[in-house]
Amino acid sequence: FGPKNIIAKMKSLLTHIGAWAPMAEQQAVADFLEKEDVVDAWFEDFKGKIFERLDVLATEFIALKNKGYNVDVVKPHAAIYLTVKIDLKGKSADGRLLATQEDVTDYLLSEAKLALVTFSAFGADSDTPWYRVSVGTCHLDEVKTLFAQLENALKKLQ
Image (tube, rainbow, N blue to C red):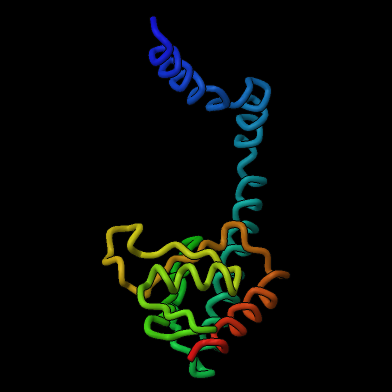
């Protein structure tokens, strides 16, 4: 029963800690779920807020496209993700060439403070300019700031 075995067993144990909610929380959720009208109302409100965020973000990407930036968006369809295209490969800013899509992703994160998931994470080619944007934690009051930062980053590119 050496140190490696103890570490392996602790890792296994720790993966289960916190995996289940305490009994009181489980009971409260079970009681709540029996109130179908309340659950339905909550769910409809939640879906409305998700669709609103999707629409606002899509509208902002379309506005950037209409300004001539090489971005695009797929109209949102019933998900918490927005599919966007940001094709900046070959551009440069401050002497920094965006030679690969990874360079583009890094540039967007550092300059625009925009975190995106590349489609390569889902099996697409590593050089695809398509991304997935989650609106699950997006706040509408942050959208204007986010797109101002994104547009400023795009303006810097040549």
